[in-house]
Length: 282
Image (cartoon, rainbow, N blue to C red; front, side, top):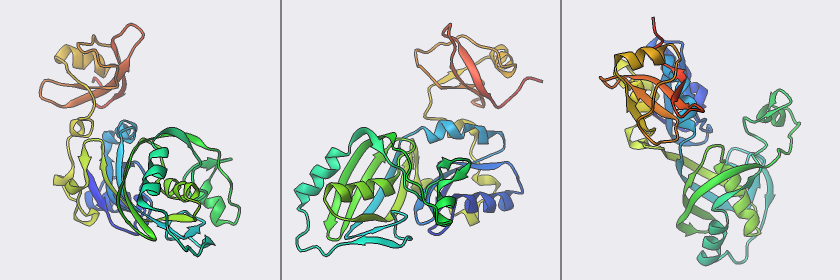
């Protein structure tokens, strides 16, 4: 299902409410959204929770407000101010556009200290809250698009399209560095994940059985192949099946009626090897 997460909620808060609303324990989400942020959170139930990685790998779209002049320890508006600057003359729109353009593509990004990254068995944010913040190692991220929508100092509104593992808070922080100004992410809204749009999302408090989408709909962005009854049975046993598409995978393997049987990747011999089976053979 698609949720429009309210501000102030953690992603786990959403999962907890959905569990209560549906009376189900097997509920998870694909792609954490920070409490200060709003927008699209994909929630999965039952066996479909195993599909999370195939959704998390899709491109994510955001609207964000970068506020210049102050930096915070969390790189967002919830943190304590760690740097500030009196600005006599703000950067021009052209300078802002150039800084945005320089951040597009694959590059190394240092995750915020307040993040879910693991450090020696603990979450980075837990260490930071305990007064032991760590400087995390940079990781490669993909930034597909950064577009200026409005520049009314001190606030810059941008549209961003990024790959998995990219922090918009870090983009805000690093954009400030490029413009020689402290900066943080003042507001953030996720507007899309792959083919899913926030306009389709619902308030988590309104979730009901009718909110649950078929598993096949949650991987509609993957290449698809239909299987006959024999193929479904083979896949149900975890066996490979022949491929009728040149797609590299992963791919959604569907029954004739459109049910999702499994998600598969290419085996060495070019056949589909199931990696997540939603309908095991009896």
